[in-house]
Image 1 (cartoon, rainbow, N blue to C red):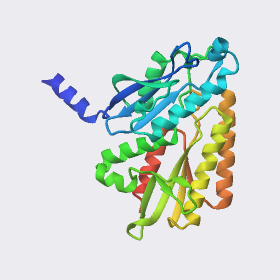
Image 2 (image 1 turned 45 degrees about the vertical axis):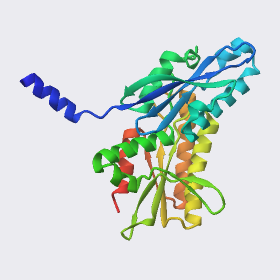
Image 3 (image 1 turned 180 degrees about the vertical axis):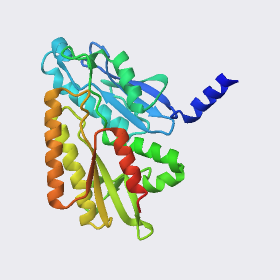
Image 4 (image 1 turned 90 degrees about the vertical axis):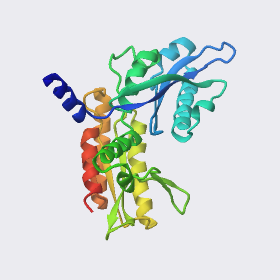
Length: 290
């Protein structure tokens, strides 16, 4: 009886597992040869959320096919990312050189954990000869989804959706699509209340870090300029100190610090966090502070 009670208690406090279907992302460098290479993994959770992780180093491909293949491989990864993020039926939209092959069922603590495990097992090209551990960045969409799941557990999905709507983007009058996933009331109303965005500096590529930070500032600035919301705030996920190369970490941290100083000088409210869990807690408190 005591053992049964322990297991029941453990199940009651355990975090719900993320479940869904995973897909191999395959690319054919030479259509004539018909060889398919695994360049990533896509995952669709039970709620329809879509995430993807593709290779970001191409040294092994260069050894196999030459320097000119890198551009085409990068383009294939970019197209794969866009299809998965933007198209619900992405698996049916492959090309002669790009394919999405369903692999089956998967579950884990988070989509990021599932992707990391599957990529490690099934995408040999992701393993760099220069390092044994591969940094898996936390994207702004992945972090935002984690915030929603935490808030849904706390308040229920219908209530959580009032603060974190299913569609996180808004089209401005000038035709810009801006990412504002978090909303809260002003004067007792959610409409025309306050909004916040999330940016991630958890990337190894300098140009990616810069673009993430600049896009976050752009989104808040446009929302306030067009008076879509009364106030705006930016949540910043800082780079992961445990898994990033030292040179990449130093650059990402320097860019994040510079961005924070700029926001301070412009009077734009912001908060920073070192982990997804920390930023989840910050956003929850912000949403419920109205």
